[in-house]
Each structure stands twice: as structure tokens, then as C-alpha cells.
Image (tube, rainbow, N blue to C red):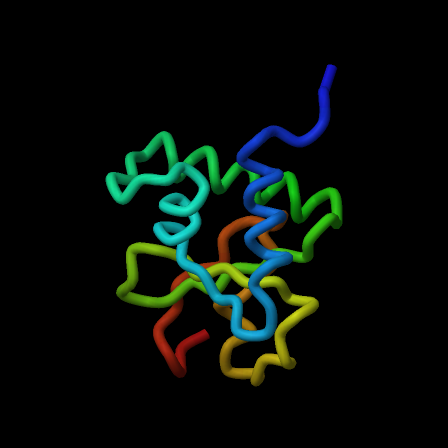
Length: 109
């Protein structure tokens, strides 16, 4: 039985509500802010990723991810606060609740 959102989910919602129009954050940035450390471990990343998936599924914040080729971290943003994306980015962008989009080479399908 669920007792509601945990401290990681509450902190992420607070971060995305506080960060407006240009609020694009990497997974590393979110881990640092949620856990208050610069020494990010796999357990921190997994916890943040699971929390963002739950937040996106509940609709509390419409979190989306951008998968950048050649970058180890995904970039996260509140889709409701961002201007529309151009069509060239649509293949590497998707909601947090869905599976991770493929890192495709530019110009390839």
C-alpha cells in the first residue's frame, strides 16, 4: 500500500515547479540537488529516474527527457513550461513515463 510520494518525488516536483521557462536539468544535476552531494552514485541515479517516471505517470508534473547523442546524461524538462520543439528533435524526446527514446544519428531514421 502506497503512502504517497516519497521525499525524492516531493523534491523533484519542487525543483521543476521552481524552475520555469528555461528549466532544463541533467540527471546529474537533479541527483546533486535531491541528495545534496556531488558524488553521485548509481543508487542516486536509479532513485531519481524511478521517481521521475512515477511523477510523470501521475500527471503531477509533465516531465519529458531529451536523449543527446554522445552524452552520458539525459536532459529533463517540464513540457508544459517549454516552447514547442522543432521537428528535428522529436525522435530524441519523449515523456518520462515512456521508454527511453533511441539515440539516433542526426539525419538517420
